[in-house]
Image (cartoon, rainbow, N blue to C red; front, side, top):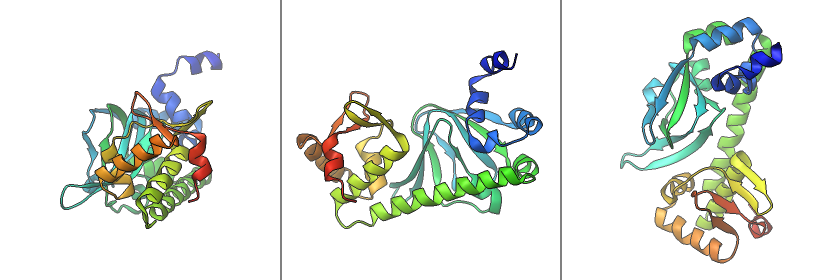
Length: 235
């Protein structure tokens, strides 16, 4: 009977069950959370939330991908993180009620679940097991931020790009017999936002790495990192 119930669950509920923070909830709390989450659709390049809205909700990516960016005064974007299906974001603001200096933008058509701070406080902060999961999420965020900061502090543009590609392969990589495919459709402009170099520089370096056989840009705009990329990786 239980197996049949699981098979009949909606895709969104299955996403929640696969997230350790939600899976650690008691059965009754998990059921209540399902009913409290608002579901919204966002089109590609639509703003999911602005900085001043970050204290209102915990966000769950049901489908699609979003990028977290810092917007410069000239309109430029520096990408801080990318979240895909099964990721959550906004958990830090849930704990300290302070806004985050970032804007979240849909990279493709996406479905996002929004859980209010009131529900989060009432259900998630009463259970030690759940609190430990929150600590785990925060530690993961800190490690990822440190890796990105380390990468963009490198003095050479190619070193930065190689380091960021390595970082993205760890978070979003799918290994096959050709190498590791970074399962994100990133434009050269978006990679430039990740590495804090110009789009023209990213295009030039990617072309050279392709000629040298270190990587390949696939038809769906994903990047394949080949064996020679890892042999030369020193950062």
